[in-house]
Image (cartoon, rainbow, N blue to C red; front, side, top):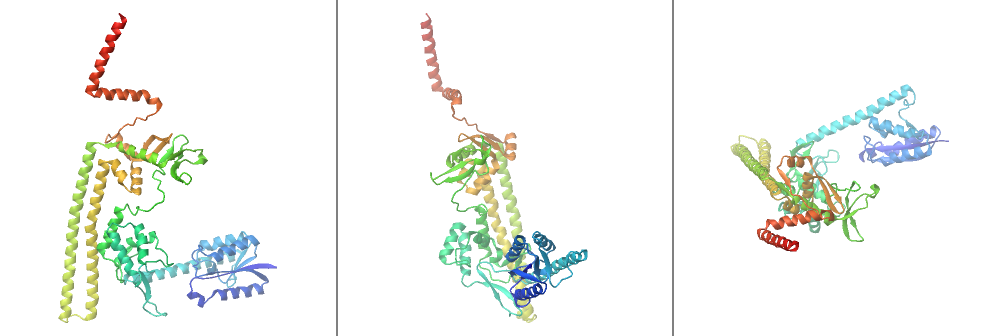
Length: 535
């Protein structure tokens, strides 16, 4: 007997009340019975969009059964149940054909393997996709209109809740402060703005305060990062690449919010994280003997960290983490910028700060003048209300518009004022690096160290647990060739260099005038003894 599977799909819970999966299955079962097919599988995807195939487990399971058991037909009510995308439609049909399974839409009998049937199928697949895209455009337009009115169209972020101010027939969904979690977010911003609490510490602190995720667990660190950078908490929201003013109440002030952004930048773009193991030289260190990249790893038996090469490439060298990393620090300590180059950097830094200060002061004056002008308009509007030359509705609408404009300018002003700190901090970091690379590197956080290494080193080759060769980056190599940088040579203490080491000690001795005089006297005595012996 010929076999068949049934597939049903609806896009949302609301659709289940109309063209329900049960109704689709019933219609397909009647068709199978009247045409002599035995049902061997029934699959369903509820609340799944037809514009994509990802996450549609029912569809995946049906295709697997058809390919494994050689099912004759796969039944759907209409082609739009299987896909609302032309590419997906024909990919699904091709996957079914691998098991010799024919896709049949019972309400569209004109689709078959004839040229005319294939033509109709192509038209229907395109029509399904067109309808979906047209509906998507209408939804997008309605969302854009909602955003223009100041209503956020998505799910409320942490600290807020979605509330329906309308009815079930005509919903009006708005965002309000969560009475249980809102004050935790306000405290989160306040604590982080002080610069004394990394996000990893705040994860534990807000959990102890009582903040929980939807699953009643700790709020993930990544969620707190996103929260601290989201302008939603100062009454704004992002949509389609733009930042718009929202109707929801803010949970923090613009001053605290932008202070948090400054702290975030000072923490190396959120790179200050807790790590169980940190492998500083991953991607930089190589085994010179086997030309294999060295990777960090932890030995549980020895309770010690190592860098080692890939066994697949034949490298079995293990180098203690502290040994090789300390050598890299010494390498950086041998880098010296010339006085002329350092002076140029200092002059450039001074010019940068001065230009930034002048531009910032000019911009601040401009924004302050705009705020004064808007406040003057608002005062005039209030006088007109008192004189009864304007109605209450018009006053309320225009007063709100002016208040929003003033708040936006004040937020812009806070941003400009805080920006000055970034210029100064960046300048200090540059000067520290030029004046003392080793100390700056040693005191930097992990990700900053990685960044410094990428400035100087392209490749660090290791042999016999020692740095044998260093390949500098093209940029840094060009500075060396321009003689703006000099590298102090390192004499490695190995047996083959014993003569060089002895000569070095002799030269050091003769650089001391007392030692040099003693050596000359000793040589005179040797010469006199030699003459006496010859007589």
